[in-house]
Image (tube, rainbow, N blue to C red; front, side, top):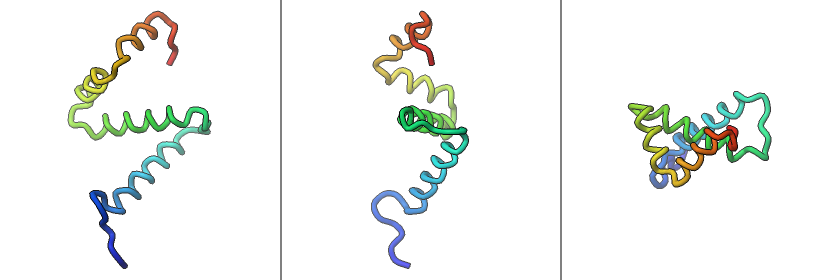
Amino acid sequence: KGQIVKGIYHVQHVNQRASDLRDFIKSFKGVSTKYLQNYLNWYAINDKLMNSAIPAIAAIEMAVQSFTTWQDYMLIRSGTLII
């Protein structure tokens, strides 16, 4: 069978993450490669929130860590930036 653990991640862990991402992408009717990075960002944020003990705290921590959070908020509020 060979070695199944190399480095810090088990092969099963990597396979599970790939499967989870595949399932996330399949939930959409179609994925444009133009917006693929946005889908990946959404997946990463969703994963971080769902695996957090307190999702609201995790969301606040992510917002505070972003350099452009306030600017984005003001653009959304003014209607200039549409999500």
